[in-house]
Image (tube, rainbow, N blue to C red):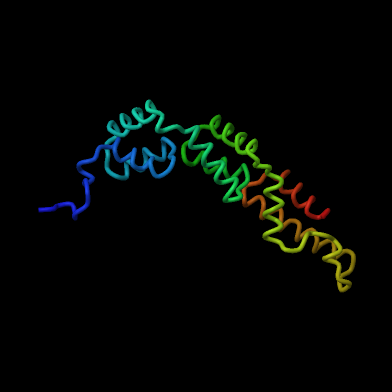
Amino acid sequence: MVLNGGKKGSRAQKSALEVAVAMLARREHSRAELAQKLRQKGFGAAEIAAALDELVARNYLNDGRFALVRAGYRAEHSKWGPVKIRQELAARGVRGDEVGAALAAAEEAGGDWLKVAKGLLARKFKEPLVMDSIADGALGGREVVEVYNKEKARRVGFLLRRGFTMAQALAAVGGASDE
């Protein structure tokens, strides 16, 4: 008689350590993230703490490594800026010093934030932000400046929402207008 629906190994038979190792086999996790997932699966605090300590001792669980992997992925694939990456890592329970080290490593590995921001602008906004492209003859000088400033603010806001600093956003928008 099969009580667990025919699945190999039921939840009742697996320890917190086994479940955590299975989760880590799929992808890196932070300590806080893994603890939360184990609590959701119904494991007790003592069993979770013991399992996480064992994983750290075996170097299966490492918040610094998690931060490096996550920051690199977000910078390269999600095209997030350093502010948004920092917020995500902090939300996942990674300490500030490990976040700083991960962002520094992402930047060293080719994560030129200004280049990423300019690339995002080029993809999102097909036309470069140039005063000449806005002045079509129908608008007066004052209206052209207002339209230009509104469009520039829109582009800066886009980059700020993607996690770039104000300095990075202004440099990217300013650099995009020079091209």
